[in-house]
Length: 243
Image (cartoon, rainbow, N blue to C red):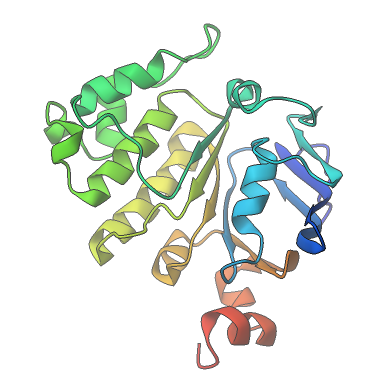
């Protein structure tokens, strides 16, 4: 696969990130097409979150380049990258607990660029399965619903690319499957590209998307879940010897 394809929405080209003598990222090549869904998996410390940090300018790459929509992101500030259409969800939900679900979504829309047309609130509430809780204070929502609300707050900004860092952490099995269905709908209905860092293999399997596996800062496998789970280095290092 040509990771630097001209048609890619996101293109990571030879990105290395050093912390002293430690190579957190080691020559990573990765591309994401418009509307594509991708799961990024690997053991703790393999470089997944560091890659997100480089893409969103929380950290500069030591070497290599990140392109978005054909534009180099090197030298841009995090808020500039966000306004280009990259939205990121961190592991811990960050919502305004004293505001209702609807008010949280309205606040999120304040940062919407004038030329962008975000989803209308009723459609967004249905999409994140919170229409019946529209007037509930965010602080009263269960954990899974808070995760969905934060995803909705990002969607309210009409991003082209959504980066989700462990969106199902702490969720029940039913919530995990519902989140996979939500992410699938993002591509089908809104054309949003989504890259997910996830440890829950139930989610990865349910999403049924392209899977990229990282080990020791490198991409070691790239394919469908049923393909990559058979690879010895993936099974032994991440999925378990009996996967």
